[in-house]
Each structure stands twice: as C-alpha cells, then as structure tokens.
Amino acid sequence: MLQIRPLQRSQIAQMLPVLQQAEPRTEMRLIRCLVSRSETRGMAGIMAVAGPDGMIRGGFAYEVEIGSDGTRALSVHHLAIPQLGQARVAGIIERAVESLAQAQNCGAVRIRLPGDAEWEAGYFAGHGHEVVRDPLPAAH
Image (spheres, rainbow, N blue to C red):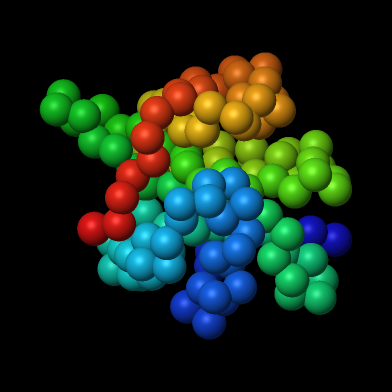
C-alpha cells in the first residue's frame, strides 16, 4: 500500500531523481532548502509517496504563498507522478494537497506545471484545481 509522508533529511538523495523526472532542472539545494524550511516553519516542504518497501514512487514540493491582502494559497510544484500507477499516485497526491491546504488555512491551491505535463494538467484541472504554467521557484 502506498503512503504519503513528509520527506525526511535521510531521503533527500533518494528524492532528487524522482523530482527530476517531473522537472529536470531540479537541484539538490532546492530540496535541502524546502526540507529545511519545512522543519523550521512548516510553510514549505516535500511530500513523498512511498511503498511498503520504503522506495519513493512520487511526490511533490509545496510552499504557502501569502498575498498582499493576507490571503493564503498552497503552491504545488515539482509534481512527480510515475507512469506506472499514474492515477493511483495522483489520487494520493491530490488528497494530500487538499489536506495540506486545509491545515495551512489556504483558500486556494495552485498546481504549477511545466508546459509538457499534459496528463497532470488535465487530471488536476479536471478535479477543480487551478493549474498554472509558469517558472518554478528557485532555491533560496
């Protein structure tokens, strides 16, 4: 059974190739930055979908964006969904995204995707989420 959980520091190296499948420009420092921010403020992080063997099968990075008017939106990027079990992993990720948005008091969810992520764009737009095609955040 697949489960989703926050990425642990010890899993950073294992997660890099998974996220690079979604966005080849992903760098190790971005992952370290997000994990560090998750541990200190909880406003950003990486969630990993793992099997019972502990192997990471997919995941995503997230950040809480706060607008000038104080509104909060959960920004999801580096969405990694493997071809094998695509719909199943996407469903697990979608439920986790919705739970995170609620826990962080976010009124909106933005799924940020590169231009070639057609299946993912269709899936999340079809489930009522805003899909944004724009550059991904850089490491801080």
